[in-house]
Length: 111
Image (cartoon, rainbow, N blue to C red):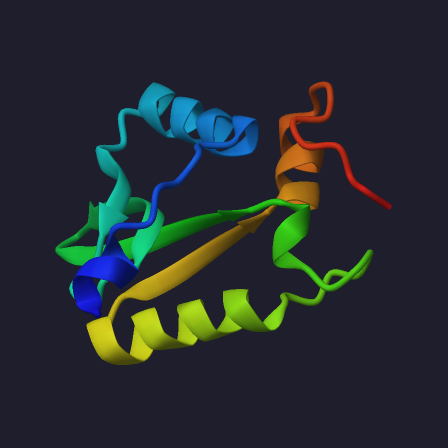
């Protein structure tokens, strides 16, 4: 079961590449598509002051309809990573990233 769960293939989004590019420019080391102990892959795993932080870059499919409410699968993954792996999980919502970068929209909203 664990092997099947952990073997899922992932496609890196333009949004995730944009976040990774900025982290690289900041000189912040991280591992992209890192597998955590309980089998989930996280978009990025970085370490700051001895603390591991899972970074999840959330495009529109992570939310309910046109809302800013995370869907069940996204919320479950975050809770399990935090509770079972003991990692802090930081979510980067697409609308906040788009606003912060002030460039052409990295991810177009479906709403």
